[in-house]
Image (cartoon, rainbow, N blue to C red; front, side, top):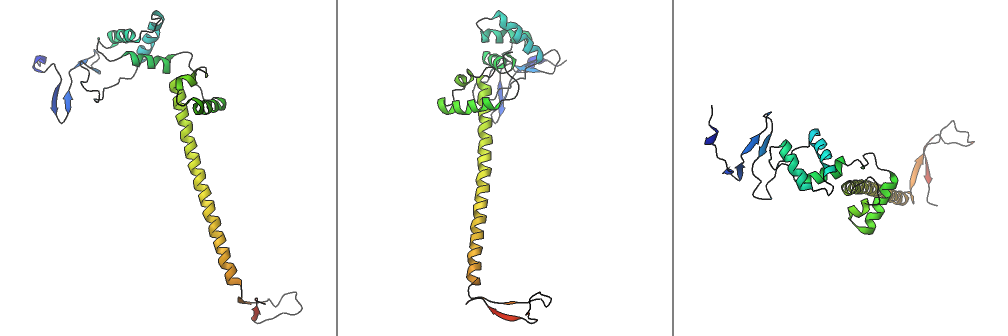
Length: 216
């Protein structure tokens, strides 16, 4: 059997800024949990997706934590699911609750009235999403912010398309006017030839090309 003691127990660099971090493995041997936090805030830390069991545990812990001590809730989740490794923190637990698990959240589509309110209110108070969300029952600051961004993106896209269409029409109109001016110049003093059909109802007709002067 391979001796695990031969491996280092502290993080170590293998070159080019790449570090090896000792991890714990769970009983199912398909998840690895780092034993150390990154020394630098610029280091990307793996974020594990929330499982259904974690969600249920978080929901069950909330009634016993009236003041919502998120750091303590995170510790209990880590003890229960991650062998006391620091995988969950208080901020993650708080965001998971307010953005996904809170039963008062609306998860349906947005109404035109809600969209209008968000647009008008944002123009009044700026990007104070929590303040805007207070007047929208069932919507939190994160969902309000995301909705405003979505509306703004669609508005910019529509404005761009309208601008392109207006520019195209303007160019087409200018081009049309230019052609008319050229045609008018060419028509003045023009000598043209017309063939008059011999089957015409006119009493006098020509069966040869006659010279017609259009400049009198």
